[in-house]
Amino acid sequence: MQKLIDKAKIEHTLSKSEIVEILKDNSINDYLFKNADEVRKNYTGNEVYLRALIEFSNICHCDCKYCGIRRDNKNISRYRLEKKEILQLANYAVQSGYKTIVLQSGEDIFFTAEYLAEIIKGIKQNDIAVTLSIGERTFDEYKILKEAGADRFLLRIETTDENLYAQMHPQMSLENRKQCLFNLKQLGYETGTGSLVGLPGQTPESLADDILFYKKLNADMIGIGPLIVHPETPLKDEKNGDLILAIKVLALTRLLLPDINIPATTAMETLHPQGRILALQAGANVIMPNITFEQYKKSYEIYPNKVSVNYESLKTELAKIGRSISCKKGFRGNHDRT
Image 1 (cartoon, rainbow, N blue to C red):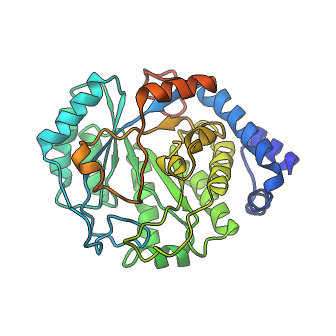
Image 2: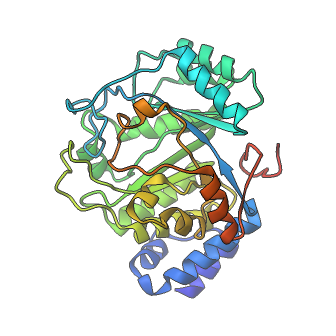
């Protein structure tokens, strides 16, 4: 097992069967995490990039079975922020020193590409990177948003297993999701995706396929999070995902894609008080503090009991593990870029 990890550290490649072997073997976890952390340090340094998250709408036409803002959840207060509110939050992010804003919403087509382009242009008057996380759109819509100044796009695939994808995403197409990701790459976005670890019926084999898909896509950022079940979804009686398995997927992703950006997701901290730090010590280099207005945060509940980020305590925690908060935008492969 150690030889496989050594190989991945040097060559940044593994076969599906090799990834499965590592995922199944918990005796080598410490060695895996240590080596993934070394690769992270060698390629992205010790700075942690902060992305200011603005959750601007919790309205979604999708009905994903694991998600608290799914279309058929009637026990939720729906909201949309107005353009002026989004720009107000963006200005707050700039004044607070953030170098990237993430505009995230449900798949809400009220926000047309043209309307979002106006918002992006308003934000880009400042020296700040913009990441979008708004779901599936057409090639032409993605093009409008790119031309307006969007730098990055996050479109989580959650699983590349065809049967599992179909079970979890009614009326949605895995092929279309993949095509959207390749369209984003073609248009020049820094393109992000990622997986939920712990979906019912998920196997080590399907997780290995996920990691190899990221490699094939040459994704620029990957978000890995454990499933946290929501009481208003069809998965309400399932178990939460395994935090250690999620961190193993993260670590293997770092070994195979050494220079990408990988967040220590909020879900990890929600499952374990040190979850975020554990992820940062196994290959992660990004944290996404939520700066949405307090009155809306509770309503953007993809999963329950989301933890928040306190800047000062985060700075202290990072210092303990030899890390610091970056004042850069943190583009892939050019981690000295301002």
